[in-house]
Image 1: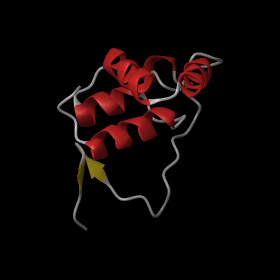
Image 2 (image 1 turned 90 degrees about the vertical axis):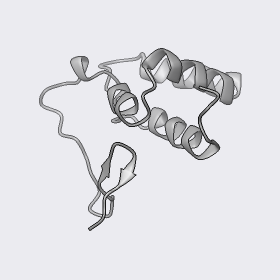
Image 3 (image 1 turned 135 degrees about the vertical axis):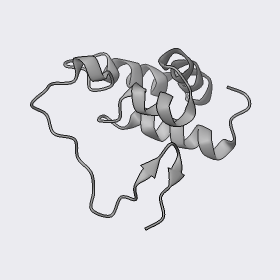
Length: 92
């Protein structure tokens, strides 16, 4: 985890905060399992922010785990969002 650049840490934190980004997507892009994401969040966030994040991801039907993701819920993708493949921005 210490070998991550500051930019990658910031992106992982951003993805972890996003409701519809599952931990599996973080693992695919950054090879960081859920436990390591939690450790990163704990070390980088203030305690109150970390507690708020943990409460949010553990409440209701979880969207952070693909196996628990409701089948009828559609994924949202902005038309302005660039295609990302294994953390590399695809060329158009």
